[in-house]
Image (cartoon, rainbow, N blue to C red):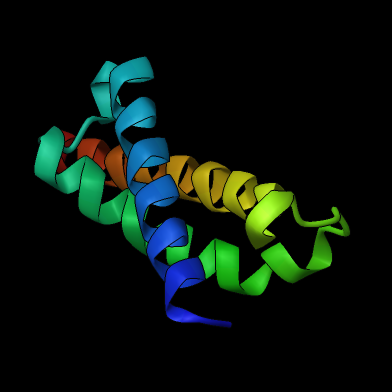
Length: 91
């Protein structure tokens, strides 16, 4: 795994986190919170689950499967973190 792949995972996860915050307003952590939660999820999901996706790399070695997994993982981590925060604020 090279540094470019890690940066792409961070960016894809951050985008996924912000999409999750926009879609589920009640679980939004704010722009910075959504970005951080998504980036963490994207890095973890892209590193752990990305290699399981058997898609051939596109031109220039860009791995769309790994990027998609990172974005989805970022979205999921942001939503879960937002829902946990919302439940904690209710009590």
